[in-house]
Image 1 (cartoon, one colour):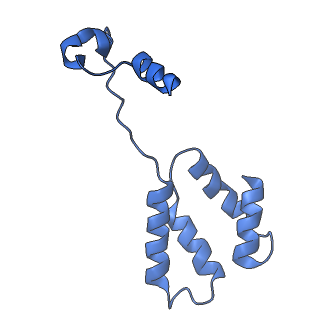
Image 2 (cartoon, rainbow, N blue to C red):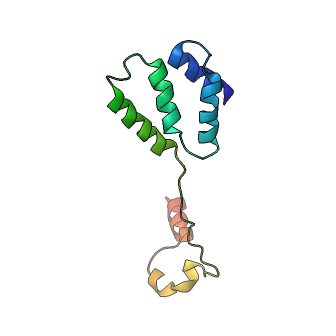
Image 3 (cartoon, rainbow, N blue to C red):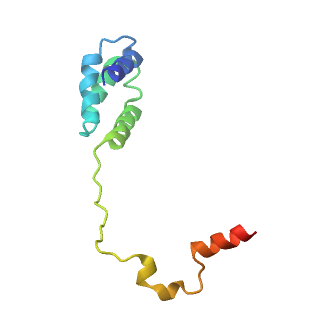
Length: 110
């Protein structure tokens, strides 16, 4: 996180003076707690000359980044236990379909 904070500080203001302000933002994202939009916008306001002219765009970009870097929920996959192999469960639907062994035997004969 420290190297990333240094890089962002160099990009934002040309020196490493903002590392201590940027590092907690990065750590929060890495911990999975999302982006602190308020702090990000404060940093941008402080270091970007034309912030007021482009405030709406910076706001949209910060909100977009918050969605991209925010915590996400996921559904646990459905786990079915004691499932018979498909080849054993409905053998009648496989009648007439060659097995892998049959296909390899034909290919080897060519």
